[in-house]
Length: 109
Image 1 (spheres, rainbow, N blue to C red):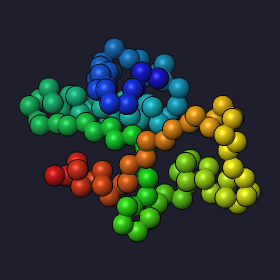
Image 2: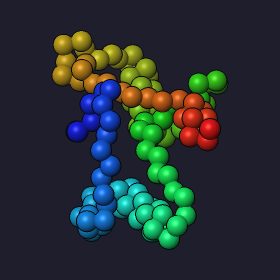
Image 3: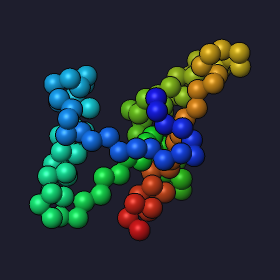
Image 4: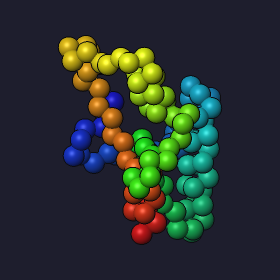
């Protein structure tokens, strides 16, 4: 994964990407949406594409998507009364979770 904390991510030009080479419907729908935005920009419309990363529940009230993978992962850990062992390889996992209401306020300002 090319992202490093504190460093800017480079824009990936999707023009040369063949949609049929993308692995799933989610990636294909992102490709299609960004191609539409790119075409709108080429026709003179102001366009910004935001990729906020992983969004968590609301900072104010905790409201969240209960079908989100990360939500379900932590819910499963809690239901099992389990934990991640500190010496396990997955203990180095890091999640960049941004509260959805904070991201919305930043994008809309």
